[in-house]
Image 1: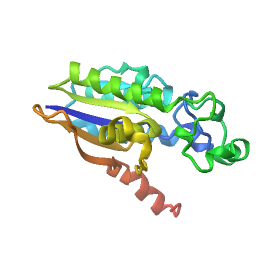
Image 2: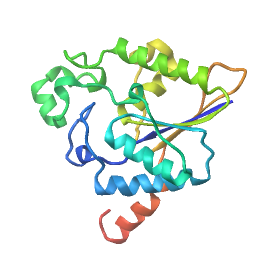
Image 3: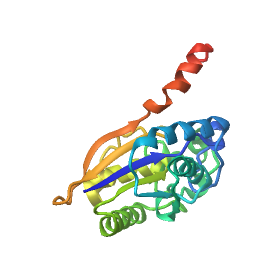
Length: 214
């Protein structure tokens, strides 16, 4: 049986500035570093055989926090980096709407704007990841630290296969959220146990409430 944990990176400076990041590289914000430590605590008692991470700094630094807690190493994997958004990267959502009005009716992740990663490319990425996981990790517990956009697409691919892009994508993937998937030994179809679990961030939320910030 394979257990797979999908983890979004902590808040980045790009998130803080309201910028659409795509594959642009932004570091963790101060809050993001704190979130990374909290999600590392969450995994302190959860068995992991392997830790994979996007090679973008915000993800790899989150992964390193988890790896330090568990005395393990991080394997960087460019296949799990965020969706490449070409000319949309570095812009705010308002700027994107103004410059690319076609994104108003479509998700920016699948807008088809020239220079962005295509649906076919994203499908191929998802297929490759699943194939590699099933080949190498049938009996392992694996964590992948990735990005909100790509995690939401990967979850849709697990549900709908090549037709993932034809369906509404309902997932909210928060910073350092954890989603848990399991592949039983005699079953090719995964079981999704939960998505966007962020209870480990409760101390941060409580602290903000105590300071009147929420």
